[in-house]
Length: 407
Ligand code: AMP
Image (cartoon, rainbow, N blue to C red; front, side):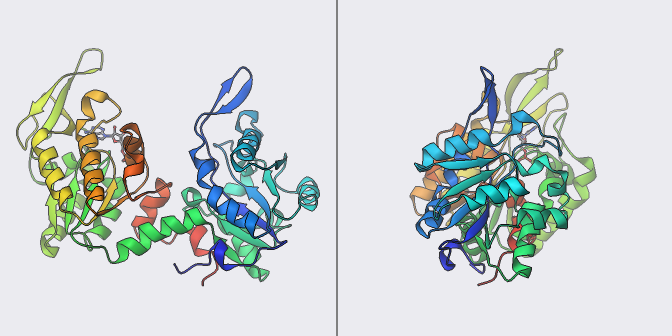
C-alpha cells in the first residue's frame, strides 16, 4: 500500500476531518426518516475505533442522496448520528452545518476520542463543484484528513480531493481509512500479480460501461467469462443472432477489438453457448421463458439469462480458478425466473473460495446478487464502491486516493 493509513500517523488530540460513505437508504416512517440498511455505517467502525484509540477528535463529513445544493430535510444526516452512536457505543454530536461558525463551535467542544458528524455536505453545490474556497472552509478546523469513503473516491469533490489538497498544502497529513485500505489491498495489490488461473467474470447490461475494464483485464486474465446482456453485443460481433435481446450495435466494433485482443494474447474468452430466452407479451411482460439450446437466439425472443450448458461450463472454469474477479450479473437476476445463472455463478465462486481461491467482487449488482443469495460472507472480498471500483479497475487514478499522502 503506497499511501499512509490511519495506523501510520499520530492522531492524539488532533482534529481529523474524516470523509465517510454514509449514503444509506432511508424511508419515512410516521414522520421521521428511518435507516433501512446500516451496512455502510458499520463498515466505518474499524477506522473510527482505531482513531478513537489514538485519541483523535473525529469530525465526520459525508453526503446523502443528491439534494443539489438544497437543504432537503429528508436528506439530513441527523438519523445517521443517532445510529452511529448506538453502533459505536459512545455519543456522536451532530452539527446542522458542515462549514462556518457552528462547526468551529462544535469542534471546540470535542474531547479527545470524541465524534462529531457534520450535516450533508451536498446541501452546498460547492461540494460537487470542488470549489476551492468551500474546501478551505471544510478544512478550516482540521489538522489532518482521513478518507474512508472508497465509494466516493472517483469523484473530485471538495470533501474528497479539495480538502486533501488544502491540508497537504498546509503541511498536514492525509491518510486512508481501514475500509479504503482494504479496497486498495484487494482491487490493486492482490490483482497486480494474481495466483493463476485468474478468471474474470463480467456481466451486466452494457459492453460500453465495462469495455475499458475488459481491455485492461485482457492483459492479466487467463480466462474471461461474459454473461448478462453484454454477451449479446459480443454475439453480434461474432455474427450470431440475438433476436430481441438488449444489445448495443454501436459497441460491436469495440467488442470485436476485445475479441481480437483476446485471441492475440491467448486469453480464453467465453460467451454463453446456450441461453434462457423470453418473449415480450402484449402487456410488455416477459413471458414464455425457456431454454434456447443454441449459440443463437431465436428472432422472436430476447436473452434474459445464461442457459444450463453455459452455467455448467462457467462453473467448471470457476472451480479451477485460483483468483476470481466478478463484476455484473449473468442475467436479469432481479426476476427470480431469470436468476438461476447468476446464483449458480455465485455458488461456484463461493465453492472455489472454500477450496482456496481468492474471490474479489467488484461492487454493484454482483454484491447485491450475492447478498440476495445469502452468500455475502463466503467470498474473500466485496467492494463497497460500484462506480469507484469500475473506474479503479479501468486503471484510473481516483481523485480521492491520488491526493492522500504517499508513504
Ligand atoms: P450493470 O449495472 O451493468 O452491472 O448491469 C446490471 C443490470 O443488467 C441488472 O439490472 C440486470 O437486470 C441487467 N441485465 C443483466 N442481464 C440482462 C439481460 N440479459 N437483459 C437485460 N438486462 C440484463
